[in-house]
Length: 121
Figure (cartoon, rainbow, N blue to C red):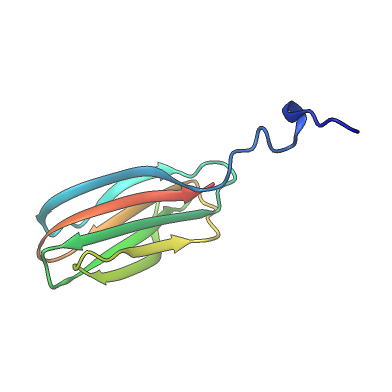
């Protein structure tokens, strides 16, 4: 009978892929418009998303996932809109290749919101 050495299995050094959070937050206030957070994409990561939800407003919330070009210009790659009723809006890109990504959240009325800036890896 052959014994298997657990220390030499090929999966020992590889962590399971899962959603990992760059940044998260909870804020309350009148309509926010601007970059929430900017993060560098980890090497080998191809899926990045912003997940957000809000309350206390009938107006929709819009989230934008942006990347920075080599020339310093920010370009919107995904947009998601959701009413402020506590349900999630997700802006996700599956073929991330740029170095820097950021998120933008906007609403015209007072709201409470939570967001998670995440990558899959």
